[in-house]
Image 1 (cartoon, rainbow, N blue to C red):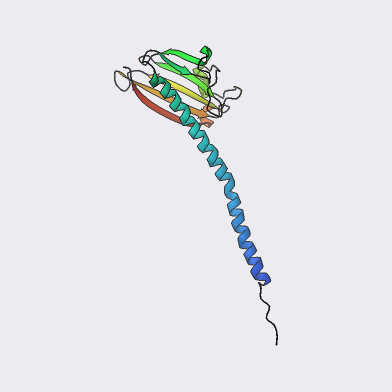
Image 2 (image 1 turned 135 degrees about the vertical axis):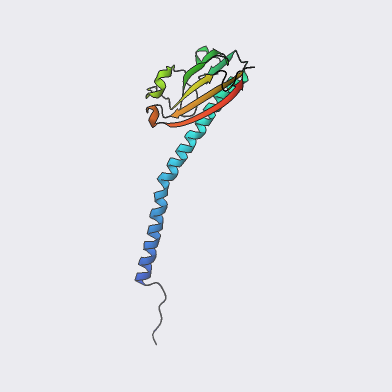
Length: 168
C-alpha cells in the first residue's frame, strides 16, 4: 500500500502566492492616496478654523471698534489690525503658519494673487468686508483662505467662507 501524503502541490502554492501578491500590491498602492487625502483634510480643517477665528473676532466686538489679531500674542499691538468698522469697506491679507497660528508679517492686498515668500507661512487669508451688502445695515464678510503661500493663487487650494453681519 502506498501512503498518501497530504499538503499542497507546487501549482496550488504558486497560485495562492500570486493572489496574495496581487492583493498586497493593490493595498500598498492605496497608501499614497490615503496620505494625500489626510493632508488635504488637515489643510481644509485648519483653513476652516482660521476663517472661523476671523469671523468670530469681527462678530465679538462693537461694529465700529473691530480688531483682528494677526499673531498668537493678543497683547502685542503690532499683532493687531485695529479700528475696523462694519459700515466701511475693508480688505486685508493675513498670514498663518502650518498650524493655523497668525503671523505678524504685513502683506499688501495686491500680493495675495502672487507667490508669497515669508518664512514659516503656509496659509494666506484675504479678508474683505463689503458694507451695505446685500442690503443697507448688513455687511458681507468674506474670508478666502489659501495654501500653500509659496504657490501663486491659481495653484493654491482655496477655501472661501462668507458671513453676513448686522452693522448694529
